[in-house]
Amino acid sequence: MGLHMTIARWLCVLAALGAPSLAVAQQAMRLDTQMFVERVQTDINGRERRILSSADRMAPGDQLIFVIHWRHTGTNPAKGAAITKAVPPGARINASDPRMEVSVDGGARWGRLDQLWLPTPLGGVRRAVAEDVTHVRWTLSQSALPGESGRLSYRAVAR
Image (cartoon, rainbow, N blue to C red; front, side, top):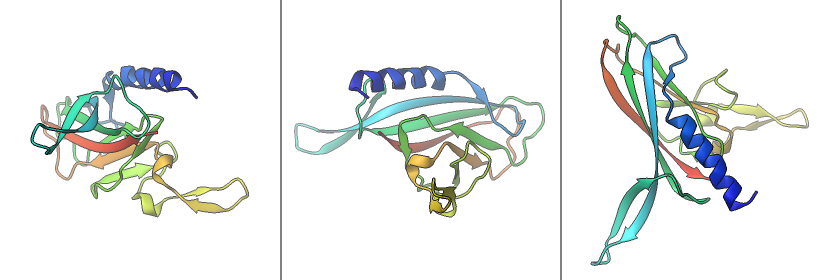
């Protein structure tokens, strides 16, 4: 796949990320996602500076940062609310956040990455890897009150 095709695919993903969505567990949660590319630049004194820029141009290997803004839009407290987002195709996530659960099967099963297994074409199983992750999820530790909002983030690498 050429670089132009990869960029076109990412632009489609960016358009989808801008659309609000609802959390899966029938919670009234509005989710808005932003995606940034993290670049390291050297300043005039030779110090490295990390710069977040718009994700309109990216290349394989770029460090990506996804920021998920959530807001509870319901009228009752949301106990045990889960914030769930699909991982864009072509992103290999960093699953080091201990509060984040991942799914490698479209959200059917959840756990830490080192706890998940996938079937192999020859009838065996293999341990899941970051490239297999289809969804990420965080369960809020406290009840979310109506109108409450917050922010979550995760890192990935563009493939």
